[in-house]
Amino acid sequence: QVQVVESGGDLVQPGGSLRLSCTSSASVFSMDFMTWYRQAPGKQRELVATITSDGITNYADSVKGRFTISRDDAKNTVYLQMNSLKPEDTAVYYCRAYRAVPPRYDAWGQGTQVTVSS
Image (cartoon, rainbow, N blue to C red):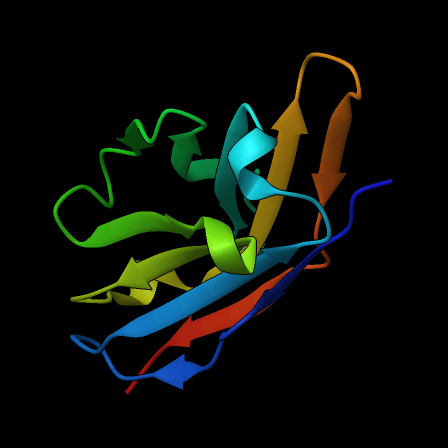
């Protein structure tokens, strides 16, 4: 069973930056998708950014141009660099590792809190 652990959440002022990390117990290169989601209080969980095994990235419209997802295969870690943070980015951020072919994986982390406030 794959385990993923997020870290890097913090309280930051509007306009600031944070980098979140997601470390997997299995190779992130072998995953079909490594994805960051977020869930704000009272709202549904939403996809923020994803990176495929081929390195193709995709972003929610609300974060395009501000957030960057990247992968370090040697460290089995995926990052989410968040710049120009806004109060509406406040949420718990979750990492998901997904692999469709055997061995199949669909692992979620416990989440890390990001709060954007002055």
